[in-house]
Length: 509
Image: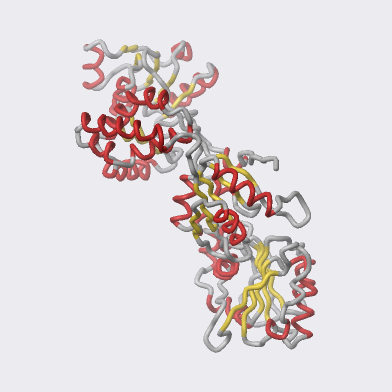
């Protein structure tokens, strides 16, 4: 099997600002303005070792003191574009927006990055809120739209982050070359550092017991020469349910494992927003199945899982919905267990419950439906609905049916249910792209839903829900119209008439 790596999705690449840490040691930088705001910016630049020049007719007492001490250059002239010179970064911090505009325009003409304080529209770079535990530095930005929120986040991180974390970073740096020399295999080296930084050695450094930390690390290195040899490494596999699509619906444990994985094998329906939760350096490999397009066979997926875990990787098998509900997770576990590898399964919200909740449909309701049946519209070989399906049982009048992968066989499914006793006017809904921003809800009856689906060009993924509970959605919806419009990722629908009692919701244009 040839491994296909997933390209970085464009919508995940797009950011208004690229976060980076610039080395300003000995670099000339220009600041226009001489007030209190300018003084705050100067402190940051001087702390980073920049050679600062301030352009302003007058300076605060703090800035004057820096000039007298020889740490700051002062130019009393009014700003002119020629002052941009060879300065690397430009700051505009005056109270005159016209002057700030001139500074920004001159910087752009000279291809210099410019920050205009409190004016993100004029700025080509922004100054984040900073937590400084050098060499550990954390920057928080809201893109200039909510500086008070950035400040609040900084305060919370300050409270959480150990004050000695910088000492731990420096200690790690001193050992880095030694560890790299003695542990050749990069996977083994990664595991070693994880053990050290999440164990007693790191605690010893944070508590100023560096000598003891050195002893613990040296002991770990000696043990790693046998326990972490390339030929003795063993990885592990995690089967994680990604939920119905919305990134807010993956479990906490699933997110933890996704962020720890070396390699992620994901289904076609796992959203890019969920994949964005992975480590930046993780390998992301699509192994999805498509009814009428490129697909990866289940046997190839099983073989790839075993091969990667055998090489020592931690592999997250990320599956849409729940691994054990029409996800073939059992087959993958069977292959891994047969190879003798450890496996953990993290359940996920399956499409039936996720889509029903997004459409405000209770799958069971006292006096309406006391049971729900989950059934797939396709067999394992992606053919017709299971020929052994017990249609009389599925057509039982008081149970709710949640039918996966039903669109290709929609007309046949509805005809069979009617033929075996379900009333033709039974309420039915199709939830396309459930829980996602482009969710659509198509309502109808067993007799009409196939025509409605064709009229609105419904495509997979879509969940079909059959039963009287569908008609309850209008009275049970907990989200008003204003909230749905404010949170389109879950509630984007528009109104139309229904042929049965229930919510007046249908397709989004």
